[in-house]
Picture (tube, rainbow, N blue to C red):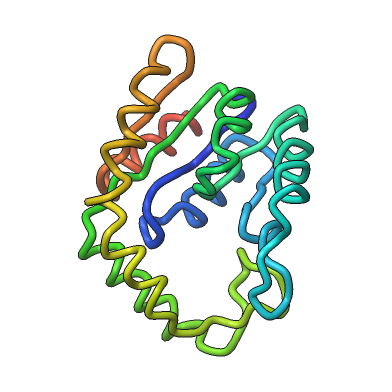
Length: 169
């Protein structure tokens, strides 16, 4: 494994898993949120964002966490491993709520400075509808890559721990 992308719903554990994968495999850790957002929750310019993701994906080895559908193909083209964290909606909503409470008005380690944790109803709606709206499309997309890429779907903590333990063995 040289380049692994970690995708899934917000609250599925992408950043936590990516950090553990970084430690287990020795790959550079890239949180897309740190590159996309600017202080005050300002979004990157679309053209600037595509160039930034291309530059990140062109690095020799990495683990990148984040969905960002508009640049997913850039990462897929470079990745040799695609890991989808497939969590139920209730668990993602619970984890997002815990994260907000834990980091309220402070910046999380996987975010850029100036993006303090906050409650955002639109974001909650995105998480609540992610599996119904986006899950099948993402799973279909990555299932077409089996054989060409190492496609891993992890559905629970036991599978996550077993996968990481297998890398360390």
